[in-house]
Image: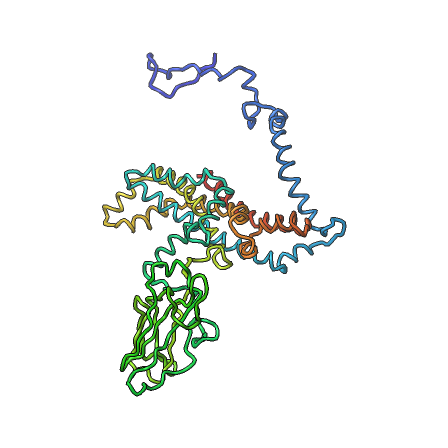
Length: 471
């Protein structure tokens, strides 16, 4: 047996150092003869055999579709005529595709940033509340809902009718708290009467108010209206004809309509309802010189000295339509509304990943910063966020890849009238390839272009993963 000399103390005889038997080689002789670099001595063809099914699936489901899409994008809609890069040139000239591209830019910039920021805030705050786990569960729960179901939910949330749409129900409630509703929305004077439309929804008398008669009183200036909704006068008092009063201009505003017919236009008939709360103004040279409001019986009175030579006007505020909230799914707000629904789903995903990063953070650094006098905002901005930068980049890149493929939320939430304004590249790809005007050459070009947009984001993510592995 081989022996090696140990560099220890002298032997018992005081001469040469003691010798220690060499350890036997690990494993058998066959193991010792294995070539370095092989994992557990496995032959390369065995590893290739195990990888073959995955490689076949990868080639059939990924490599072949990409190669065929690139090939198909070089041909026209029929697939017979070679057009070269013509389909790619159309990407930047077609108005629908340019709108989709612009919306994709908005999605990539806004949606992942907002979702990551909310996830960061939720993750930090849930560490400080007693029911943090329950809160995380509630925020993460939308991830369990499919995109289709979420689209249907938010299509109802954004309904224009406040009686059905939650968003407008809240919005109208807040608005009506601070703004007085119009007393008789949609009402108008009788055609051919004394009042005529004067622009902006207001109505003004055709003639001016003259001087008083010999008795010092003016003739009543009545204001008959029609098109008042029955529920608005259901509890109104019967209209009363105004009497001339010296020094005053008087009149009555009423619903000039007799149930069952038989009434006389411009005359207060029995049973006709008074219009209370109506604003009546006297206008001279475009300036309001006097204003009053009709009483419960529909009568009003203005100072004759102030209104002589003026015209009576019923302002637009008397007839403005009821406020029904914002048009969330209109051309202007449809994209922000859909982004909000996406953030509702994915903020929980961001929160969970960031919370995992927070759990592995060195708390001594945070405590040291607090001991040095830093407040909570400074600790968050200068310590927590820099330490979470790798996690935040993972979340941000993952969400950016996700929004580049957004399709179903836009397709389900946006109504047909607003769908062109909410268009994105994935939806345009579907409509071009399988819609009414089928052009799979252009659709393939859109698919390749979308792949080229995803590749840089994936490359950044792979570089980050390699850098983390080296650490």
